[in-house]
Length: 144
Image (cartoon, rainbow, N blue to C red; front, side):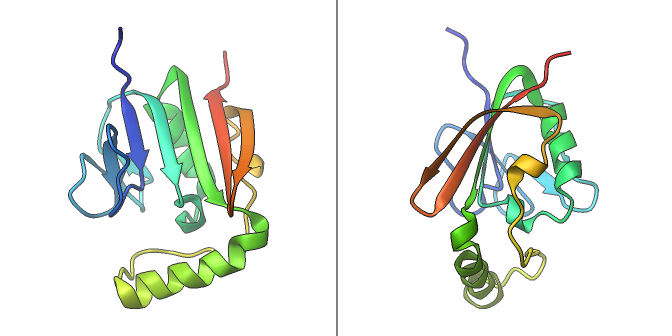
C-alpha cells in the first residue's frame, strides 16, 4: 500500500499528526513565504489540510496557485474556515490571540468573510459540509 504524503499547511502550534508541517514560523518541515506565496519544497502531496489559515492570507489566488503546484493530480485539498455567521467572533478572538496572548505581528487578518468558493479556480469543489462554527471544503485538481 502506497504511503500517503500529507501536508498540514498553517499548522502553527497545533500540527495534525502524521502530516508534514508548514507555516511561516516555528519548528516545521517546510516554511511558507508570505511575500512570494511559495513553500520551500518541490515535494508533491496527496492531501493538503489548511485549517484556519485562509482568513490570514491577503492574496488567496496566489496561494491557490501554490496549492496547485504542491498537490498531486489525484490529490485532495481540505480547507477549514469559520462559517460566515461566526466570522466576526473568530476575527476578534484571532486578534486577541495574535496581538496579546502570543504576539505575532506578522500575522495578517481579513476583517470580512471571504467565501472559499469564490477562489481556488484551479480546483473543483468535491464536497462541502459544516461542523459547529466551521465550514469544510474538499477540492480536487481540475483535469486537463
